[in-house]
Image (cartoon, rainbow, N blue to C red; front, side):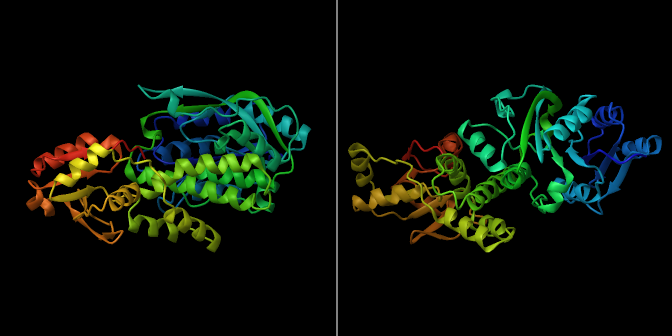
Length: 411
């Protein structure tokens, strides 16, 4: 085979439903000088067998297998290490690309001598899914050749969503020379990888052609608590990475607005983590810088504008006992206001303590059933996220509490 022009890397995990369509779009590329590196990540369905059949029919299909389920970042990193092509394109196993995608991107990147070349996408929805939950890729027009850091600033200013890892066609030498690999994150790895690439790239271009077909289905959306935590980890690392890379750009307004916006999106999620979850995430960070910034974020309080009206204060003072339901950082505002009015509390209540610490702001954290003896004499001030109000109301009613007050808190 002639020298490989493009290495297409496909992480594969339980994708049998879509895999054939994906592989057909790759083996039938109009550019023939390609290799298709498929890394099976311990699939329990027929994914491995499907790729194996294609590899027997087409020698350009290279099948690798992880020793266990190691996650998409590890699979992609193995693909980068194995790649021999001049350029690298990532394709998810449930997506597909236009037949001329590899050729068009190769010729465009060669003409511009680019390190990174963005492309457009088309989104395919299956079932009744929230279209708004899927951000578009680059929307504005960028006709020039850009320094990566300069373009990152433009993306931030224009509020572009530029984190899709497969939306970029990469020069292999650029990735390997700058040691650009994926962090070990289940979700959000593109959000961490892309900014690091941009901060190292000297030439970045945007090809507006919609060459990538992105499929959205129930399995591709992060529903589980574990997946949400992994996604939060990815967002935290994105924030820290850009903070670190832009540390010298002290006059960058784009950076400031990006960090402010990202901080607002992060802080509620961080403060909802239990103590053990915070320790777990910190232990997965590599450098002292990352750990330090994460600890600062964990300690940061946010003003949730909790307001106790004079009428509510009077109502609270009529009760013999006061309990705060919730142990998140929104309770800081609550405690401060109660202190101003010289109102003492029994402590904090949660439904189930699990990994939560047992003390907050000098007060004990109880499971709500442990405070049943105060059901007739206490008022419960609910300082949890308002989306849980109905659920918490039911819990309090079952435990015999009749006097409780919801606060308008959204985390």
